[in-house]
Image (cartoon, rainbow, N blue to C red):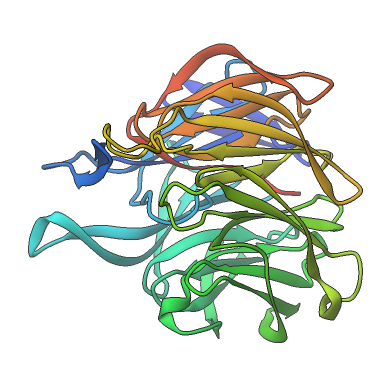
Length: 384
């Protein structure tokens, strides 16, 4: 089956099913970093979502769609459906109508139709306060949204290229900071991070019914971003810490047994504030974007250059194998379908850097950065 995606005069033919070929970037135009302090841009342009075809290198811009999003929250605030027909993007913060110099929690989920010509926002739905991470199951029938200011997860049905709200799952108090939610590959469970009180929850999923299970466990200080291996055997969690100069960590969670036995089995120090992380398509390499103090004031003793680091995953242990420079205030990471190319975002430089991945997991910058129309705040490919 083939689908044609039009963007201006560009035509992209996609065969389904196929390895992920589209990469989506959420770009926050409201926020900027000035000497370690986040400020709101006066009369900013619209936030955008940019879509790239990874069939060629460097990736080709397919479309740019205006849609509200935010750098606040882990860089998983965009998601593609497995058929690459829809893009879901959450908006954690919006500019306060009463004070344009600050933001307040938003509650919008935008649905972008890539089958339209040109691609456009098809729906705008309500979530809980402060929606952050969003994920779609491998069947393409269900979406979950972590509501960071509400302590909940919103559940949406996906049918006939449209979303419908099904309900809300209570996770914890609003202060628990529900940040991201990710499906297991079989779609029967999901993991939820809570950076406000340092817990993770396990959700059970039967059809369209999503419930919180009794299983609650811990990883490190402020679990935030989360990815699950393609074979479902483990998950990796970024623990972003308190941002006061300490070296922070990434944890591995063993998912090989029944959900009641899921637990953290390995934690490794990776540097200050590991904001984004992603696993290679074969699950053998973990990429982590590490702020390393690049978001701190010039006079901070903890100021450092931003980095992207890679770790080999073997026997539920992480081994460092690669490192390369990255722009400041780093956010999301994504791999090409063959795992040979890594992409990583910068909010300050408003770009995506491109790295070649060696057979040993080492990385080197391999092409000029991709310029973004706003600060790179989230990066994702389809999960199948």
